[in-house]
Length: 139
Image (cartoon, rainbow, N blue to C red):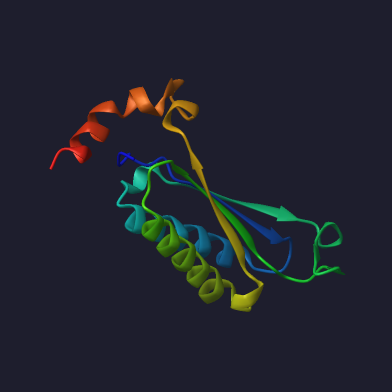
Protein backbone atom coordinates (compact mmCIF):
# COMPACT_ATOMS: atom_id res chain seq x y z
CA UNK A 1 0.00 0.00 0.00
CA UNK A 2 1.43 3.44 -0.86
CA UNK A 3 2.51 5.89 1.80
CA UNK A 4 0.11 8.81 2.06
CA UNK A 5 0.28 12.25 3.58
CA UNK A 6 -1.80 12.72 6.71
CA UNK A 7 -4.82 14.69 7.70
CA UNK A 8 -4.60 13.97 11.40
CA UNK A 9 -7.75 14.49 13.43
CA UNK A 10 -7.87 13.73 17.14
CA UNK A 11 -10.90 13.73 19.40
CA UNK A 12 -10.67 13.15 23.15
CA UNK A 13 -13.70 12.38 25.31
CA UNK A 14 -13.62 13.35 28.98
CA UNK A 15 -16.03 13.83 31.85
CA UNK A 16 -16.95 17.47 32.33
CA UNK A 17 -15.47 18.91 35.53
CA UNK A 18 -12.90 16.15 36.07
CA UNK A 19 -10.01 18.31 34.85
CA UNK A 20 -9.16 21.99 34.71
CA UNK A 21 -9.23 24.26 31.70
CA UNK A 22 -5.46 24.48 31.94
CA UNK A 23 -5.21 20.69 31.78
CA UNK A 24 -7.46 20.72 28.71
CA UNK A 25 -5.24 23.29 26.98
CA UNK A 26 -2.04 21.47 27.93
CA UNK A 27 -3.51 18.16 26.80
CA UNK A 28 -4.55 19.44 23.37
CA UNK A 29 -1.20 21.18 22.82
CA UNK A 30 0.84 18.11 23.81
CA UNK A 31 -1.35 15.70 21.85
CA UNK A 32 -1.16 17.86 18.72
CA UNK A 33 2.62 18.15 18.92
CA UNK A 34 3.15 14.44 19.50
CA UNK A 35 0.64 13.48 16.81
CA UNK A 36 2.57 15.56 14.26
CA UNK A 37 5.89 14.02 15.37
CA UNK A 38 4.75 10.40 15.21
CA UNK A 39 3.05 10.81 11.83
CA UNK A 40 5.76 13.12 10.46
CA UNK A 41 2.99 15.53 9.54
CA UNK A 42 3.15 19.34 9.41
CA UNK A 43 1.73 20.64 12.73
CA UNK A 44 -0.63 23.03 10.95
CA UNK A 45 -2.55 20.03 9.58
CA UNK A 46 -3.39 18.66 13.03
CA UNK A 47 -6.93 19.13 14.31
CA UNK A 48 -7.50 18.20 17.95
CA UNK A 49 -10.52 18.80 20.13
CA UNK A 50 -12.20 17.73 23.34
CA UNK A 51 -15.72 16.54 23.83
CA UNK A 52 -16.85 16.94 27.43
CA UNK A 53 -19.63 14.70 28.72
CA UNK A 54 -21.83 15.26 31.75
CA UNK A 55 -20.86 12.89 34.55
CA UNK A 56 -24.34 11.36 34.61
CA UNK A 57 -23.99 10.56 30.89
CA UNK A 58 -20.79 8.53 31.34
CA UNK A 59 -20.54 4.91 32.50
CA UNK A 60 -17.34 2.89 32.78
CA UNK A 61 -17.55 -0.79 33.56
CA UNK A 62 -21.15 -0.37 34.62
CA UNK A 63 -20.29 2.36 37.13
CA UNK A 64 -21.58 5.88 36.44
CA UNK A 65 -19.13 8.78 36.38
CA UNK A 66 -15.82 6.89 36.56
CA UNK A 67 -13.08 8.91 34.86
CA UNK A 68 -11.86 6.88 31.86
CA UNK A 69 -10.64 9.00 28.92
CA UNK A 70 -11.25 7.82 25.39
CA UNK A 71 -9.68 9.07 22.16
CA UNK A 72 -10.11 8.59 18.44
CA UNK A 73 -7.28 9.36 16.03
CA UNK A 74 -8.19 9.58 12.34
CA UNK A 75 -5.43 9.06 9.76
CA UNK A 76 -5.37 8.47 6.04
CA UNK A 77 -5.20 4.79 5.16
CA UNK A 78 -1.73 3.51 4.33
CA UNK A 79 0.08 4.37 7.54
CA UNK A 80 2.32 1.48 8.66
CA UNK A 81 1.01 -0.61 11.56
CA UNK A 82 4.16 0.15 13.61
CA UNK A 83 3.49 3.87 13.28
CA UNK A 84 -0.14 3.44 14.31
CA UNK A 85 0.90 1.40 17.33
CA UNK A 86 3.42 4.08 18.35
CA UNK A 87 0.66 6.66 18.04
CA UNK A 88 -1.64 4.69 20.37
CA UNK A 89 1.10 4.50 23.00
CA UNK A 90 2.22 8.10 22.64
CA UNK A 91 -1.28 9.54 22.91
CA UNK A 92 -2.04 7.35 25.92
CA UNK A 93 1.21 8.49 27.60
CA UNK A 94 0.24 12.14 27.22
CA UNK A 95 -3.29 11.62 28.54
CA UNK A 96 -1.90 9.81 31.60
CA UNK A 97 0.83 12.41 32.21
CA UNK A 98 -1.30 15.54 31.75
CA UNK A 99 -4.53 14.36 33.38
CA UNK A 100 -3.06 12.08 36.05
CA UNK A 101 -5.44 9.24 35.21
CA UNK A 102 -4.80 5.51 35.56
CA UNK A 103 -3.21 4.22 32.35
CA UNK A 104 -5.39 1.10 32.39
CA UNK A 105 -8.51 3.31 32.21
CA UNK A 106 -7.50 5.02 28.93
CA UNK A 107 -8.97 3.65 25.70
CA UNK A 108 -8.19 4.74 22.17
CA UNK A 109 -8.57 3.77 18.57
CA UNK A 110 -7.15 4.70 15.22
CA UNK A 111 -9.51 5.03 12.30
CA UNK A 112 -7.89 4.83 8.86
CA UNK A 113 -9.80 6.69 6.14
CA UNK A 114 -9.36 6.12 2.42
CA UNK A 115 -7.91 9.29 0.77
CA UNK A 116 -10.85 9.30 -1.66
CA UNK A 117 -13.25 9.53 1.30
CA UNK A 118 -11.60 12.50 3.05
CA UNK A 119 -12.06 16.08 1.91
CA UNK A 120 -9.54 18.91 2.13
CA UNK A 121 -11.17 22.17 1.12
CA UNK A 122 -13.92 20.22 -0.62
CA UNK A 123 -11.49 18.12 -2.68
CA UNK A 124 -10.65 14.45 -1.98
CA UNK A 125 -7.33 14.10 -0.18
CA UNK A 126 -6.19 11.77 -2.96
CA UNK A 127 -6.33 14.72 -5.39
CA UNK A 128 -5.43 17.55 -2.99
CA UNK A 129 -2.23 15.84 -1.84
CA UNK A 130 -1.35 13.95 -5.05
CA UNK A 131 2.03 15.68 -5.45
CA UNK A 132 3.02 15.09 -1.82
CA UNK A 133 1.92 11.49 -1.98
CA UNK A 134 3.96 10.94 -5.16
CA UNK A 135 7.01 12.66 -3.64
CA UNK A 136 6.91 10.41 -0.57
CA UNK A 137 6.56 7.29 -2.73
CA UNK A 138 9.67 8.18 -4.79
CA UNK A 139 12.93 7.00 -3.16
